[in-house]
Image 1 (tube, rainbow, N blue to C red):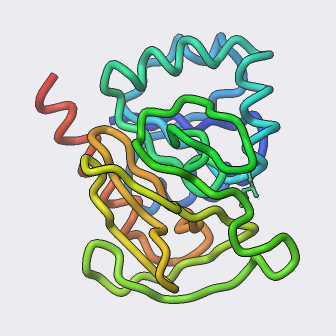
Image 2 (cartoon, rainbow, N blue to C red):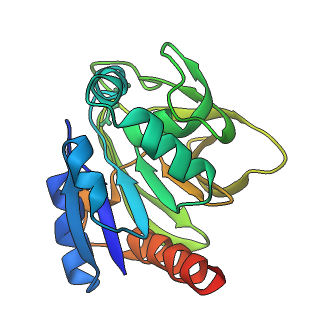
Image 3 (tube, rainbow, N blue to C red):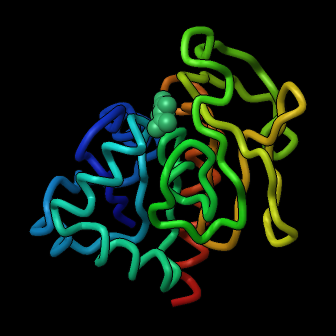
Length: 191
Ligand code: GLN
């Protein structure tokens, strides 16, 4: 099982560290040529979603990745990565989409937008680091809500797409990455 990590911009390095701890092979996607390596799952990291959206198109990565995601490739977006997977983006543009959610960018305000908390993720207390984070302001009926804090949805899944408004890779807690690797394993069994 090999996981590709989008590494055109933002906080991609720590995802590799988390995957090392869980024993999953991984490599970084920086340009279209990197797509030649086979992979079973994709991580879209935090960063600046507007910049990532533009770089994905400029580097010729948008179309091939969208096609693979739309065909069922398991994908995990954190923070800006959540925004890239949302069908509707308040204060930004739609990128890959496919999750029937409205992502509100910089939802906690730009200055005071960074904080830590602990809240249940899929029922298990999980530390959460928020950095100028979005939250999910609205979710459709097909969306499974995995975590809420402060009255807002901060983690959700729809089919092959998993998204968190927080950065699990910046904590020592492997819960969310382990959940994603389970999704990748069951998708491999099906194909
Ligand atoms: N504020 C960023 C955006 O809107 C997301 C921040 C992050 O990924 N830590 O794209």
